[in-house]
Each structure stands twice: as structure tokens, then as C-alpha cells.
Image (tube, rainbow, N blue to C red; front, side, top):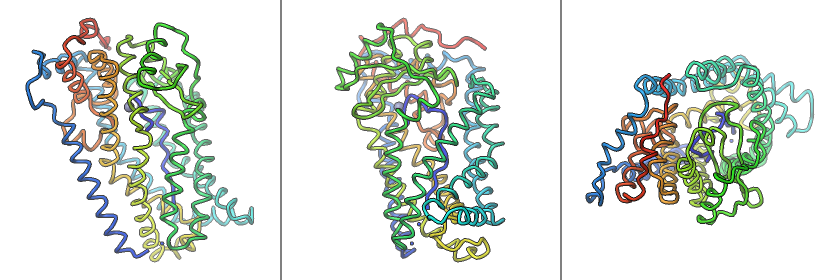
Length: 463
Ligand SMILES: [Zn+2]
């Protein structure tokens, strides 16, 4: 769970894997699992979507009116802009997917993939090293071909909506660092995966999925401590007025943290965010400087309550299990899809078989299609986890009005009031309306928690 109250730098690089078994049996089993998963998810969604309490609330607070009052804090023009930004993102997901399809197809059809493999074979004789060299060429070429789209999405469009603080130089520097991280991590995954295909033959995909899940866990665990600092500077938070209440909240929730860190997210944007990350000796609580600059103590506390919820409720591990199910089904499909493609066009593409690293673009094609179609499922898994953390944060920090204000700030780049189907398909976090409704529902049962200062606090200066 990259969690937080927010996403990182948009680091998600398309993951790549590669794969043999009775096709029909696998497809039927996979289809059954997907249906079961969707059923489970719909049940949990209906549980969370019920906003009207079964019995009347114990205070006279009109929950819906209180929610509307918070939503009205954002000026109409800014709301329209945020909606346009977020809705544009729906289309970008489609363009990103189509760009991947075109690039992968070109690499196969024009023989580039075979040529990169030939070069790797000429350079070295050791097969794992050949895989790594192929991977380096592959990722560089893909990054180059998709660069125009990356620049538009990550740089020009973000500036157009006033969401990026970086000039082109520093932005490009972050992209290059991300590419280097991708080269190293990708090679760490690719080498054992192709090793498995070569040794295990037909049944490689079961172990391949297992290796991929372990790899994801490894990345999740090292990312906050070894990757995040490549993009931002982390320093101990000195301000005792903020640090002490956070450490007190942590102790109250059984979190063994002794330090609170601050990081310079304002280098990239004005988005507010925080996280509780790491494991054993590396456990740390981090707040970004935007949160510290823009938010009041009740707002910081409710945000930290949410983050502590992720930690205490073991969301990292639960997320891995749920994603693990998707990965296993994905690998079964991958094995089938790749064998299907190779039987028809393998010779024309000069791809020798499933154990040939030049098959990678085909593998990426199959998995991209799978994960693209699964967008509502993965978003729903994430959204439910985030909703749980929200409930935890409300109970831990007891600041429903602070919570509503933070939810409004997140509305600067996430549509505040979508339709239910829209929220189901596209939202990886609950919408502003859902979150503020939960906060006001909590407040209706805890009238003494009302905070007039938070309610009256203006959040947006008209732009
Ligand atoms: Zn979260």
C-alpha cells in the first residue's frame, strides 16, 4: 500500500513478467476466481456505501447538510478545475494502455525484440546476464518511445492544473532516477523469472507468480527507506508542538516509533501526505512539509490516525494477499496468452519460445490488458482499505471536522462528488463526499467532538 492520504511521485512502472498447462482448465478456474473476487468485493462495497444509519443518530446533526457545508468550502471554479483534472485522468488510463499495446506490438512486429536478444547473446554467454542486458535495452527503448506521453502527463498537464512545483530540469532528474530504479529492480525480477521458465517448463507460472509476490513484498518493504529518499529529503521533525501529540497517538495505538520525520514534498507539489512505513528497526512516521505548512493540529492528527490505521490493521500484508490472488490469476492467463500468441506469430517475430527473453513484449501486452480490465477490482481493493483506515483514524484522533477539512484539501486533485459507478470504477481512495459523510456520521454520534474553529476555517483562497 503506497497508501497514504496520498500517492507518491506516480512511480508505478508497468511490471513485467513472463511463463505453460491445460488451457481450458486454467481459464475456467481463473474465470471462477475472478467472479468470486468480484462478488466478495461487491458485498464489502455495499457494506461501506450505506451512508444512512439503520437507526436515527443520537444527536440532532443533519449529516447530509453538514457534508454539503464542507463541500461548499471549495469555490465553484476550483471545483470545476479539479473535476476536469480527475476526469481527464480516466482517459489517460486508456491512452496509457493503448500506448503500451502499440509499443509492444511494434517491438515484436519489427523484430526489435529479437534484435535486442541477439545483441545480448553476442555480448555475454552467461544466460542470467543475457536476460539482464535484454531488460536494460527493453526498458530504455520503452521509456524513450513513451516519453512524449510521460512528459505530457507528468509535466505539462500537471503544470496546466497548477499541481506541479518543479521546473523541467528537476522533474527530468526525478524521471531519470526512477528509470535507474526500474532498471535495477526489473533485472532483479526478470533474471529469476526466466530462470524458472527454463528450469520448470510448463509449470513455471505457479512459481513465477510466487516469486513475483515475494518481489512485491520486498519492494514495498524497502521502498520507504531506500527508494523514497532518492526523491525527497527526510529530516527529524523538531517542532515539539506537532511531534509530541503524534508520538502520543502512536504510543496509544501500540506503534513503537520514537521519531517523526518530515520530508520536502513541496519540491514536487502542494499535495498533503504522510505515512507510517518500514519494518523492525526501520519503522518511521513521516509527514510531508505541505501537511505541516497547510494544516492545523487536528488535521495533522486525523491524517496520522489514518496512517496508523494502515499500520495497525496490517494493510500492507492484506493488500499483498489480495494482490497476490490477482497475480496468480494473471500468471495463469499470461501462460495461456503467451503460448497462444507464439503458436501463431512466434516465427514471424523470431521469438523462439516461452523461455526466450525476446518474448517479453508479448508478456507485457497480455498482463497490461489483464490489469487494465481489472482496474475497478484493484481500485476497489485499495478503496476499501483506505475507507478502513479512515474509520480507524476517526476513532483514534477523534477529529471529524479536521478530517473533513483534509478530505477537502485532497479534493484539489480528486473529484469530490462523483456518481457511485464512477467511484467504483475509478477511485482508489474514497471520494471526498464518501469520506466527509463518514466523518460527519461519526460526529453525529460524538457531538462533543465538534470543532467550531475547524468548521469555520477557510481552506481555499480564490484563484
Ligand atoms: Zn491511506
